Image (tube, rainbow, N blue to C red; front, top):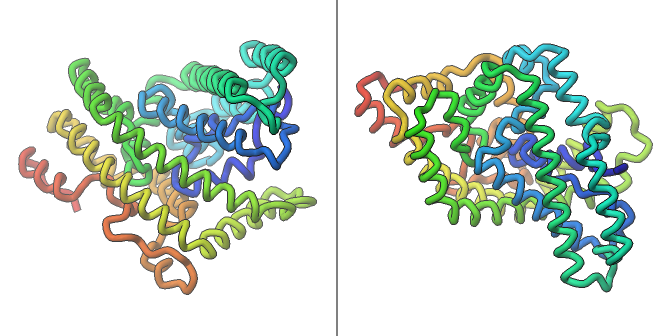
Length: 367
């Protein structure tokens, strides 16, 4: 199934909102889209939206949260901090980045199904494609995404030790401020009881309607920003083979698009403010499930993260352009003016709750 993965430059632009690697799988469109007429790209965008929603919902359900950190294994500090050997890393990388995933028999079977669908019903990208045909391909695309996700998750679980997997969850807790929403499964690093897991599951279920509204806002915002990035990137990377130069050009373009699009920044602020409201509500309910010992462990991970986590947080903030919000707001034309109450990094725990919980728990409040 050739051309099943997008180019890396397109994939990287999605990290601009700090969701490092969350959308790695959701960008997989499938080879049947490779010859689509650009004039009829609305359905491709529909597939991207559908894929992103599916992927984020699987994260919410705790099915693929480890994939958040897997993309970061390219960094030596992260691998060393997690204790991942070069051999382990190579096996995971071969599946995530190499041809191994496309060559997997479970994925190859989709090629025959794709060919049959197109032979019997035509292309969903055609101008006269019916609603029924598009629905068939959306369903096909969804199954393809979930199969790929299952293969990648199994690859990670089979090649990392239980202690390394626990460290990945600890990483997510320590970097909680950098992710718009804390996924309930990360708290398993705190050795939850079966009853606590059940309570977190109930909280997740109760808040699902609010989560779905947030996902709609997030996906729409990402798609609009991605469209601007893709338009600005057209032809700019042709002939550039040096990876560092490609990254430099790409980053400059992303920065220029951000600066030239204050309306996008306003939309981002509104989206993140909405996410912060949901995240704070979710955190408070989840934190109340933790025992005092678990709470103390979580606070220590957030307030005193290992050096490799600090470096990763700094990199994520740099990617998002939030490494120095105050300085950015003073730059002419930066377009970065945080809305009142907008999400900003460094707010892993709502301060009011931290004060109240520390009083209740009886141990000193952190800085």
